[in-house]
Image (tube, rainbow over all chains, first blue to last red; front, top):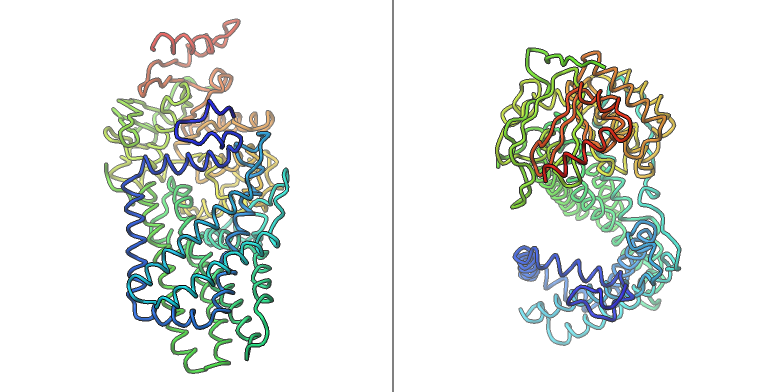
Length: 347
Length: 254
């Protein structure tokens, strides 16, 4: 790319870095085309952050995290590590499919990884600043949390970069479906077709989002927790298990919401009705989430039987219900947009 | 090839499009399209890129709401009786719109169930065999090539004996042998009066040899039509035939 041919407003130093130039252009175009929506979204996120901080447990959780810096460090390192690994895999898979793949220019992989980490770190710092501004954190606690978040981000980024895919020039990552497994076909698939396999789609997508490889970074963070505390092993295991469980649950929820639009568009020309579509689309994901939470509750019973059953079951039911509601809302919205069944409003 | 178009069951044509206007936000794509296809007729929809062919097909499939005008499939108005209209429709989706994380077999099963079929048609399974698609049935669609995805999209469109088959560039990416199988299969369905075919295409050999009629969509309107006799005459002409006629029609209209 020649510097003179760059669109106005794009720095000339990005002339040999088309991946970064394109990312910048994408953001700029999105802002110009959807300025009210983007600003509204930012305001909504800010309002949500304030609402979370206003909730009574928020202060208790923040105080607890400030008092347990090792656990905080481990959690932040896990989150940043997983995020870096996912971006690494995306960059690698784009190496084969991107429209810029054939250009004889660097992929700017490290710059893209670092920029992503910096953006997430800034978001965390803004959240801590808000917590301090609304009086949920004392100055010393805010400073301690800031140090833990910064250190955790650095450790997680390094761990993720070291344990993830190598960013070799010319190397291409595996396509997404490589991480999903083919389920055996029903014997009566041709003589009595059913909608059952439809819900395998979001489950497979969820598996791709929480690729098993990413557990390595959790193990790395687990080993990084220093010995010498009273029960470092238990804390480390709890942190690792918590992260993996949360990641699995969130991956399944996100996958259902993200794939709902594609599924509705694919099935729009059929006579499928909205309620049937929603039920067929979300059941397997909901069952899998319920199974994961049941295992967690079973394990937690070993620590506190009554509390695990009372609070754990209520929280698990609430999470699965919320996840199903989000997926159903995404299905309904997508169906209205593409006219699945008769779920279409007139012009 | 049948030149006499049969009227659909109950006297209604397979597809009736009246004064159709459609677009995306402020962009007007279709402005007053009128079209009618009878059962037992193969209509080719021609037009340069961005002339509105896919938009028209999406309106017919109920995926895009027109701003004005009406569409009826076998007499069922799409707006008032969407389910009745879709029951008669077989729509070949874009290959990239197929679910990459389902296998071909799962796609066929889910699509058949979504159409409310009691079983998958034997001739669709036979066509899958002729396409040499059977070995691909238990692989993820995400691993398919463009041509293999195209085969699956066509098989899905033909499920349930639809009275109107709507295909968008269905021969893109198909190997010559599979393309010939598909042309013959569609022709036999049309000739037997089992369905009408609306095919948006740039493949002029298909139009010349297999279509009963062709229309040119230009600037959101039907700019020119070729009857079966005119297509036969163009086929018999030495040289460029329909290609030259199409280019002349495009230049003449613009």
